[in-house]
Length: 212
Image 1: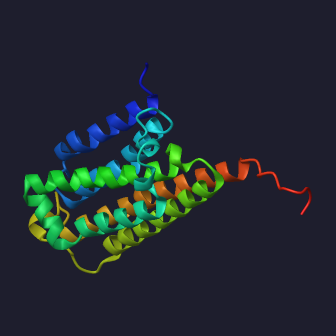
Image 2: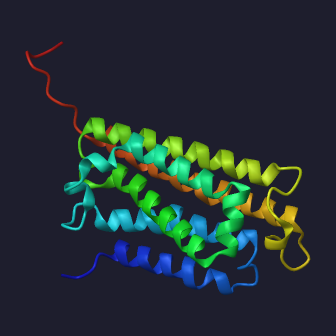
Image 3: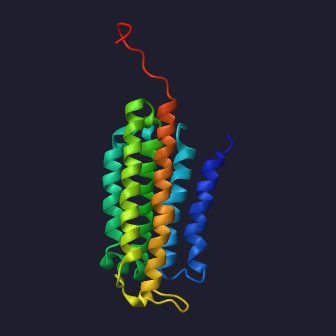
């Protein structure tokens, strides 16, 4: 069976985030770390989820209870905000094992949210509506975190792990926040709009007893 193009694109995006971004001029800065984060949860994860949806490898077919949209959104909120707390962020930036756990957890929760919205368990009007809510809520908290980083008046993170070139820690943080605003929040918002369009195009269920 030929691999799905979206699945291949998702794997390629994931590979670029993990194995190309670190070698860019800003790869060791906060912007580089945020580029990896956004690349994993907002680009690679939706592509992978779309590639897996409806296939025998779709995990929502066997473990539907683990992919409830509300649960997925709550778990992603805790994971994303937790790893952006200054102490945990410093740990991930200075400890390879912690960095690996962080990145794998980003991928896991990203797939959890996107599969809860687009996986086989999301078929049906009620499930689709729940998926829309999950993506919109995720877009909101991603936007809020991006705004906090982009508009913060002082650096939230250790200057030893932020800044590149002529840019200091605060400017580096601001750029990372802008990236999350423009790509992170927008990706989930777009996903919610796609599901909303699908819901509006879906035929209305037949009413029993004729006209209301």
